[in-house]
Image 1 (cartoon, rainbow, N blue to C red):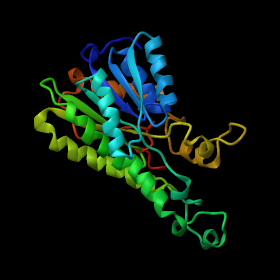
Image 2 (cartoon, rainbow, N blue to C red):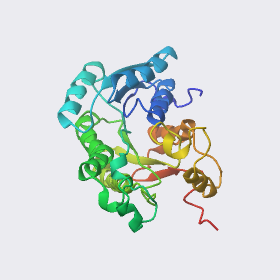
Image 3 (tube, rainbow, N blue to C red):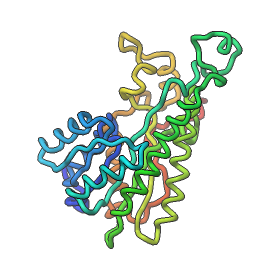
Amino acid sequence: MAAEHKQLKGKTAIVTGGGGVLCGEMARALGRQGVKVAVVSRKLENAQSVTDDITQAGGEAKAYACDVLDKKDIERVNEEIQKDYPVYDILINGAGGNHPDASTSEEIFGWDEVEDASKNSFFDLKEDAIRHVFDLNFTGAVLSTQVFMRHMFSEQGSTVINISSMSAPSPMTKVMSYSAAKAGIENFTQWLAVHMAKENIRCNAIAPGFFLTNQNKKLLLDESGNYTARSKKIMDHTPMERFGTPEDLLGTLLWLADPEYSAFVTGITVPVDGGFMAYSGV
């Protein structure tokens, strides 16, 4: 990708969840635009792998380990980042995920689920797993924003980009906790956009549709690498008839990050879903 976003060169970005598939590619894209990237991930080795890709391509990046569920740990890593980058221009809240104990086994409830000890019904969802999923996807983004945003006030303005999901406006079956948390992210995005508007801090979200990642691969592909029944339902409801790739998110990312292109855009969630939400199914 050519370095076409000259306004981004020299800016600093923090990417939480930066060691993952989607946010890792976002971090690399920002690095190619001359952005100095703080890649934050729960596992340092994952962040370092993305950082190495950026630096080997001629960009500037540093890796940091952090648990976004722990505000004290966020404050600790913020002190580390501050030694390298005192002012932040872009914050991508990308840390997230799901937990099997917070998901139902079946799409539609049936009493046979309750009677089968090997299955998870709605009544079997574990309280700690529900809290974990909500905290990881929603509370972690709020806490990260509280800590990092203190260093994002500048005359040039800055931007927060949250990672939502198409499961926010239209909750997917099985993943109740994840869907609710992402709906909270979209609400938080709107709230923060209004709250920080006079400080010239824009806040928007990107809502990926169905992308193959390490987290959902077992749900979408069988052991032979073929589509599962769930994947086939997704394909039937996606007019473009494919899963998204990480690169599909980059145009939206750069548009929202670059004030030359989106200076008057705040408080929105942009779907990147191959037409999934537009299709009624008939």
